[in-house]
Image (cartoon, rainbow, N blue to C red; front, side, top):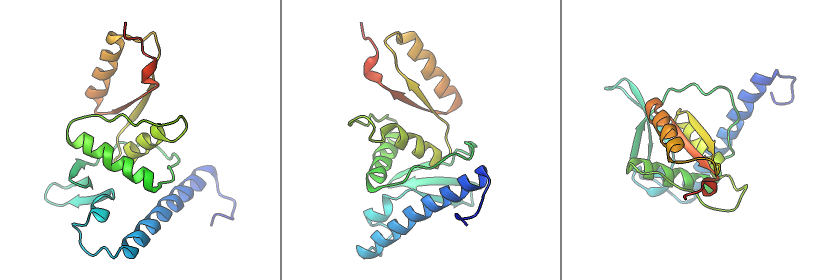
Length: 168
């Protein structure tokens, strides 16, 4: 299928399916190699899973002890991030922070995928994620308005280059 001439939207769908299937294959291989047989094992619990809750007539996303309703935000037919073991760790950390009503601040060298991992997690749980590139001109009023907008819409905010904001 990938060798045929596909229109751009169809090719994007196929590439997303291949990317997610490759990750699922890797997860299955890891669980098999580690002889995970219990649904309570951390290796299984630490994977992002989607469940249909019949009594609530709703979908729920779960990772470890963090459960969140599926967002149903249509985000278009965009590319998906290649999920690596490090990405899985970021997913666990970020969802546990959300579960505890906190935020997270991924740290590391430039270009290592911190922002993209956050956006991809938001995409996986169907929540809009807005990336705000911080600037020295931003003040507490600007940030307050951004926080108001994010909370009113139920969206996620990803503040890039937050260290650029002048605190004085």
